[in-house]
Image (tube, rainbow, N blue to C red; front, side):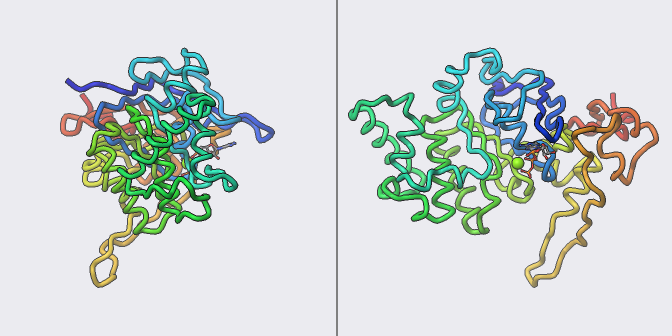
Amino acid sequence: MTEQVIKIEDLKGYYRGSFGVVHAVDGVSLSVNKGDIMGIAGESGCGKTSLAELITGRPIQLLHHEGGQVYINDLSIYEVDEEVIRKEILCKVLGYVPQASLNSLNPVKRIRAFILDAMRERVGTKAKNKQKVLDRVVEHFKKLGLEESVIDKYPHELSGGMKQRVVVGISSLWNPLILLVDEPTSALDVTTQQLLIETLMHLKKTGIVETILFISHDIPTLAQICSVCIIMYAGKIVEQASMDDIINNPQHPYTKMLINSIACFNPDGSAETRLEGIPGRPPDLKNPPKGCRFYPRCPSRLEKCKENYPPFFTSRTNSNPVACWLHEEVSH
Ligand SMILES: Nc1ncnc2c1ncn2[C@@H]1O[C@H](COP(=O)(O)OP(=O)(O)OP(=O)(O)O)[C@@H](O)[C@H]1O
Ligand SMILES: [Mg+2]
């Protein structure tokens, strides 16, 4: 039987500041099964990072939980104490590698000091406990191909790829049930990106982490590792399917255009497909439109799309949920 490790119901979150209110996540529901590697894709600004932050139960400053539930292993994350989230959930249950985490390492601290600092609450002040944790770190880092000496280095002494693996290593130190990684490869060159993907696969293969949520706007990267994928647009999920279906049988017009905008090159360097970009821009999330948010950019739009937001439809031939009115007629 499949076991759900994350269940999200109608999750909403907004940023509030001098700029106004931005509805970054607007009614997201999804579930992640144990063992899944789920990709979360979509253009810049569609709400991927905001969703990740809301999943942690402790979103970054300015981002507020507006409504909806996040269950991690049946625990309702917005109903447990802040302390439980900090001490228990955010390391043992949910490891989180935030976007731009390469920069999260403290430039004036050696990796060992940074780790002890980050784990102050768990480790306490006793030298014996600190040593125990550092021994575990060294052991764990070795599994990720990092040498023991790494913990004595400053971040500037490490390459981008090593820094990234250090961050992934710290986030997976306590063998969390789920690892949530946000754009882990976007600042890396292709070879280093590949190493990181291999590191994540290794974590999964060796059972250190069973379930991974992998956020990236880069679908070819997701395709290398993910089993399932959700596509977000303007704060909402528009399609959820197996990774294979997203690539080979996309249903939502937005997903189709995203896939068509991926460059494929022949060995001689010529492009295999003509790239079709997605004309226009996503809507302003300060004032999202009433109807389908992709309406102004959609080549297949219907009149009703303008005023009515589509529910999820599934068809006889395709059981993947798609939020698009085009699928209404063919749905059960
Ligand atoms: N700190 C912030 N203050 C105000 N608005 C924000 C803030 N961070 C993000 N937003 C807005 O929230 C929306 C969702 O942003 P988010 O960063 O979640 O998107 P994303 O999909 O992660 O993008 P990217 O691929 O560029 O990382 C966007 O409209 C963005 O402008
Ligand atoms: Mg982001």
